[in-house]
Amino acid sequence: MKTEVRFHRNLVFATLDSLKLIFNEQKQADKVLKQTLKRDKRWGSRDRGFIAETTYDIVRWQRLYAKAADVKAPYSREDLFRLFAVWAVHKGHSLPNWPQLEGTPVRRIRGKFDELKNERVYRESIPDWLDAMGLEQLGGQWEEEIKALNQQADVVLRTNTLRTNKTQLKDALEDAEIRTQSKKIAPDALVLEERTNVFSLPIFKEGWFEVQDVSSQQVAPLLDVQPGMRVVDACAGAGGKTLHLAALMENKGQIIATDIYDFKLAELKRRARRAGAHNIETRFIDSPKVIKKLYGKADRVLIDAPCSGLGVLKRNPDSKWKLSPEFMEEVQALQADILSRYSRMVKPGGKMVYATCSILPAENQLQIEKFLASEAGEGFKKETDKTLWPSKTGYDGFYMCLLTKSN
Image 1 (spheres, one colour):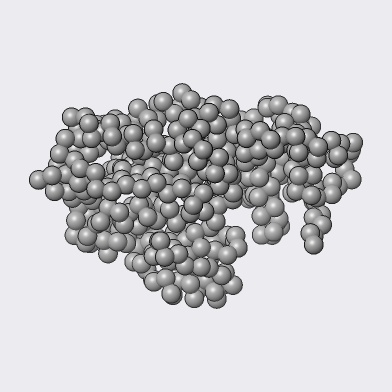
Image 2 (tube, rainbow, N blue to C red; image 1 turned 180 degrees about the vertical axis):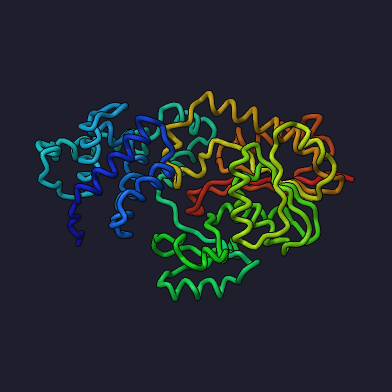
């Protein structure tokens, strides 16, 4: 039996304020929510959960809900209330008796949903061009993948083996009344049975774990790093995979983490201190010289390339509204350029992994094929590659390819 949800005005208003910033001002959903959730100290975890989950749900299904509500972006306050009303009807909730929701045509909305579920662009709530691109590149499999990518992501932790082990972490979480499950495919992973805010736990502050999806946790091990090596994480960002590499190397050797965004490297340094990862050196790419100095110097290179992020729509549903055909072309050109230049850092006899959080062949297998056929790819050999399909794993979509360089 479904429990009746009682809506609180201040929580609904906070949700609509968040949606206005995300839809009308193209702000990033996670950053907007971070600010919104700080608004009222009296909100408990259930209140914050309502705001976050309702906001994400309306963002994820924006096209479907907007069509059912007969509204178009940019949305007025009245439009946002209509989106909220449609969301509530779709979820089977009774609408509160508020003036803003008076006269909501509940039966007509339900009929509209029945009608819209026959068209994939509404049923899966995606732009036309993205649906066409997915269909062109993945054929019949696109249907399964986009459906899986519309499911909410699990919260997955990666045990930081520099600080603890998985058994100890699991026990400490049990003590905090957080139940988890192990996954064989990622030996350090624990998947939460229920969503909860793990960042407030003392063991998080002590560096016992990072939040990292099961699929993402499979990239660093593919690079086959050993303690004492010199490893370059070429597009390190805020360092999720850099920290995993440091743990796999047992803090021995050197990891050079490079990125074109200095603020991301600053975040990486902060995270590394918490994790107790001492073998990481950050280098800000402020000129091509930074990369050139590393030519032929690395035993291992990880290129976690910029991409469409299509594989992580589960956790970033707003990105499907921000992507464009022009961006897809630009990012593919960037991937090819990065592969061509950064691959020169690999020593003879060394290894390189190219990875993306995308499921599209144009960003993945086809990039590797082009690279291997180019002058820059001479001497490289593809050892293995795999696509992690959300429809099959239940986790994020990823591609990873291991290449070796001949002596």
